[in-house]
Picture 1 (spheres, rainbow, N blue to C red):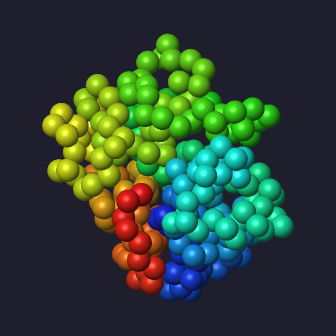
Picture 2: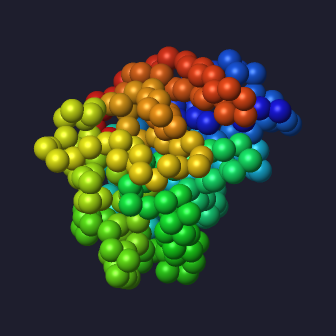
Length: 276
């Protein structure tokens, strides 16, 4: 039995199948963790959704910003752009079933036995892992409930930029969502910088990668994340960046996590402009 964590797929279904063949994935025995952004930009997002959903309990996926964008498009809250390549999903007979399944997925997964947590983008330095699980559950409850369409309508925006326990309503949920699905850089106070998408060193003065500011938390589990294609396969301390930019012409990567971590990669055939 093996467990693999896989970075952002973004519709690159052929590469996913090639990667699973390379690691000799056995659906009867093995488990897959997906770091979010199953869809968007690649040519086969529909096939990816159907495949991951079909894995049932053998797969765990956390929600990414592109997954939430799909839900917003289906709800009519956002337009689908040509580069999204969502037409197959939007026209699929099982579209609503797939989206209902997608919104049931968590923002954060924690396995204390394996010693890992997984999320799509980032963790606020001021939050312990316990804090983060509670915050994630707040958003998950709304996404899975009757008010999820209104949440989708309210989740867009870069403000507030600073966490406070006094935040409430949509502002509180928006901040939490931005941390889990969009965060790359923040400052020592936890103020978010959500516009910069480049590698470390490209950020404004006073901001750092979120994982460089978590040292005081002494996280008991190792952290897996995606979202940051310009970062590459990153492994600072107890943090593993899984997004190796497949849809941008890089690779799709899997990290085996049930034993001493081992990387496996396959090259991507699709090449898009790395703007997301």
